[in-house]
Length: 212
Image 1 (cartoon, helix red, strand yellow):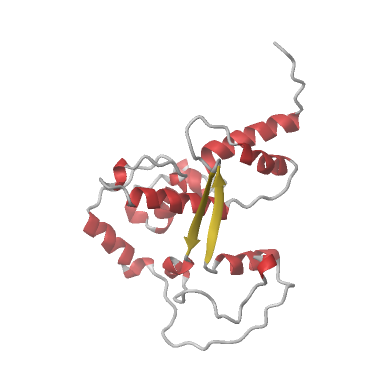
Image 2 (tube, one colour):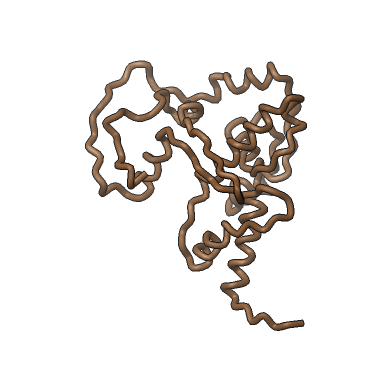
């Protein structure tokens, strides 16, 4: 056997590239994704990498393919990180999945791990629609409120800046091998889950193009 003399950092980067291609950004079976190498190297060196926009684009693309299947969604041969969708559904709509015992999910476990392998509840289409429209799963503001004006400067903390960017409508681009996927992002479809009832913030809240 040839000694490749790979450093510990190199082994970690290789593992992260494999993990990204199979778990975070799956696109095809048994395919090595060179586009994950840069992200894996950054993570190995301790840099923080945000996958949310890319993962959301993959999810929208996969759900769109499934919904447009001429037969029915269950027969769609599409690959995307559906485990994130399952975790989101189980977290926000507990009635859709059987609960896991607290002893099987310690506090130091991530949220997604606690929902791994759970079996879903079988529902009819009308039952599913009723759940998504049920007022128990909405968090609405008061019907009467005062709209205050706030001056937003560029000195915001990083977490606040990321939040403001996330609640703006946008287009998510992601490249999968030779395919470029562009998916619109409309957070107003789900903002009721978090106490918002407007589509996007006021137009007074603007960001220059270079910072988007």
